Length: 127
View 1 (cartoon, one colour):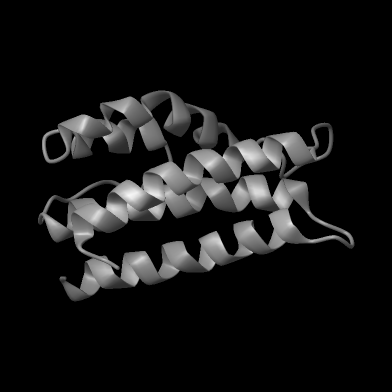
View 2: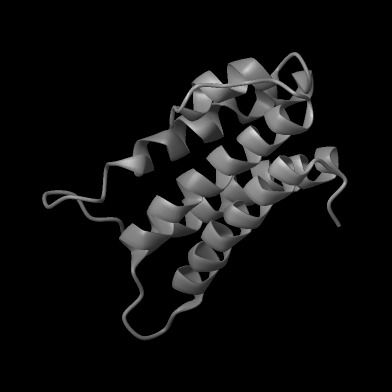
């Protein structure tokens, strides 16, 4: 794997670890944090796949826009469009007062993120 793609994977795994930790926490879980970290985990895996293929991308956080760029490489990832649209909202939604995530939202975000993560890791040859 190209070093820059490996770096994106490493950063994605940091977000994934936080997502998993917050979803498992029994004391004071941050469901907002879990939802938030699901989004950049998926984003970084999409960017890793693009980097591995030598495809440049702009500094965006819109997962559906990134998916559009990845589809030439991974057409089967079209099945993640709804999941990625769902996760995209979490880049901002729960960061400010007025909206809060609940356990159900966090677990749904984790489930969707895991789907994208697994496909990306498979495509990148990461065990």
